[in-house]
Length: 89
Image 1 (spheres, rainbow, N blue to C red):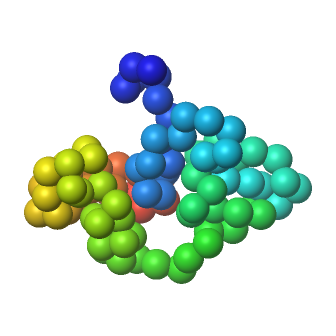
Image 2 (cartoon, one colour; image 1 turned 90 degrees about the vertical axis):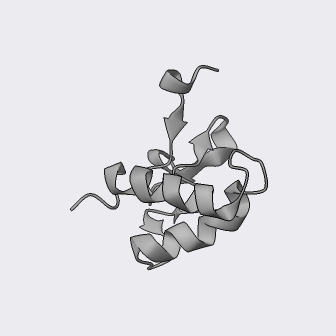
Image 3 (cartoon, one colour; image 1 turned 180 degrees about the horizontal axis):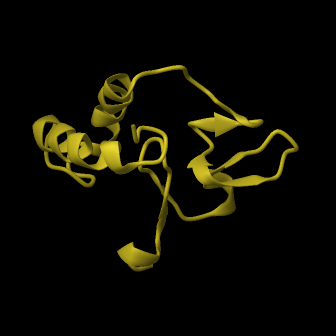
């Protein structure tokens, strides 16, 4: 799947590639904007700041997938997250 066609969670930037990756709306239907880890039954699963979300994600995307270390993962997320719908001011 090409990067430009991928759908990314608008809260944590996780690529959503299969139905199970998508969060759910209040009526149980698939939410097209947020992943299952961030959004369930029409609400965010955690009341966190953008900085807290970044820190929670760093360990999951460092160690070479897709970033080699925590510093580069954090730097990338600090650039990406402000562009995501949940964090846009």
